[in-house]
Image (cartoon, rainbow, N blue to C red; front, side, top):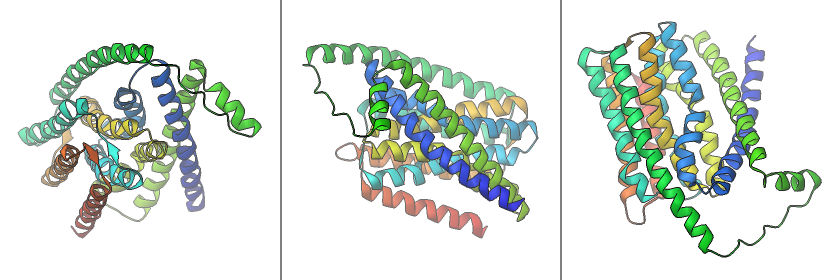
Length: 333
């Protein structure tokens, strides 16, 4: 049985890597074809898609009354998303941050984390009405984001019309690569890439998480620690692979937007929807974890506001060190 679970880990990782590659290609391609900024695509399609594992795991955990896993998954994923994933992505390539994101998306991420802490401390439980509050705030944010996207789309179309035709890209050698290059010119094929890539990412992450949870449970690891480590890191694998691949492909807006959007989605939708199914206990230890998540978000915002509006390599190093420090603390308590 253990050998089978290890096999699932390997297969899950392979699905994640290739699925993320196709997912990023498809998302960036649709954005360019439809004159939609890659930042908006990252904040919505990519972010919500890569957060599907968190949603599935937390809702299932709430239904099964495993509230420590449900809360730990949300908070732990947000910590991993910023300190580990953006830390690694920034080491690969400095990540520019859009001014529009600094004005709206970063503050909303901080607001979401603060709201989770306040609602959790109110009765040390997230009740169904708390879930409705989180979902309602998310609806307002999405309305503002989509309104901005429509305005930006008009500007991008006007800019594209004013510019001269782009230089034709050189098709790669090799029959398969050349065919793939030609097919990426069609919107329907890009949509297929997004759907298939997302399916591979979500399926691969679920395989990985299930196998990792089995191994951790077999070793007698506490539920809260499983939620903050194995489950949180496992369900964040889509964000990790997608953001790293996006950084390598120089699609920095997708890399950053994916993480910010995922963190917002995790709190407002994943925690909100989970609370509708079963009250989520918010313990003193959960408070510490949530404060770490808020600190990570504030640290990211600070680095993004520095000269040049970029998350630079030194910031990536600092975030990774903070991530290591947090997990050392976690396993020592």
